[in-house]
Length: 445
Image 1 (cartoon, one colour):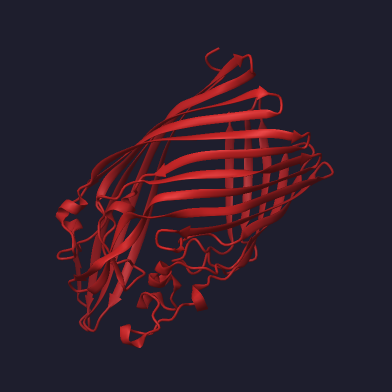
Image 2: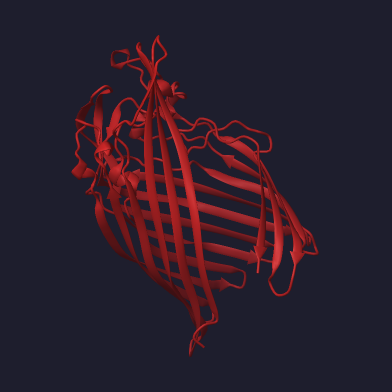
């Protein structure tokens, strides 16, 4: 049998973003509006071939996946003269150029059982990524330290990655699991082509980095898994070694006409280090309908080349919750508490990020009056406070047909108590969304 399960899929998505930057001077009020559009199209196919060997029955999974993105950006400057109120409209120079970003990959994985307590798995992937920009003269800020040629990028990166894992049944209710995986991350448009003065900073200016290359990593994970009656639990330790890490480093200063002098920053593969941590998860079924559950994750990361903390490493976080499943399988409900500790460690680049300052309109945090307006960090030592958020979820089966055909309705009530908090991985956002409601329908056929 060549196929026991064949899947094909396709999708189309788009994202729109509007951003405004307002600057007031003694003579004018300027409002720069940037509109970004991203169209994403993709398709893929996956097949499963059963294999029958002397080691037992197992399967081979393989397929192809393709994704293309079309990125477009437009800018408009509205300038209101003071005190006349006269309005002029123009197209300012300096934006991320338009372009395409394509990714094609093929993958294969298998699972075998050499003998009863042991399961082995292995897989591989070959991926090709292409970044092609379409810059125009208006994408270049005059005299800002780069030229149109720096924005003309047409590069293709090809990588081969693999993973191997094992699960050993040490006891009837206890498994030991381990996994090794390699990976790479191709440069994004932002990595290679980001330019200009960041909206939330008054100290740095980004210059294009057409020579940036992919990041690489290898990850190790090991830990026990318990599954005993109504109780299941797992503990895993992981270590990810990072190489060719993309990071922005200073290349001197640049003076942008009408804006000032800034620290010039370019992206390069200058960093390397590790991310490591522990993950714990547990669930316990009470009777036939109720389940209590929880998990916790601790993570730390260092750039060992520069001997400093990595940015955007989450603090200790986890969830605790309770779930009810109706005995007829037609509906369910659950309540979840999201618990996040404070972000108590920061990276040096946080000190240039106005998302940490008391007044982002004044730019980066500043406690030295000789370097501009005083603008201390919003919280001492660049801490982001922890928080607790309550979420409720509900689902019901509206219709069930033959085989696996069904129609489900779900309702999510997020941040039920309307808590004010700031997500530590969205460091340029002060307040996360308040109470919100999300309803959905899912038809399976």
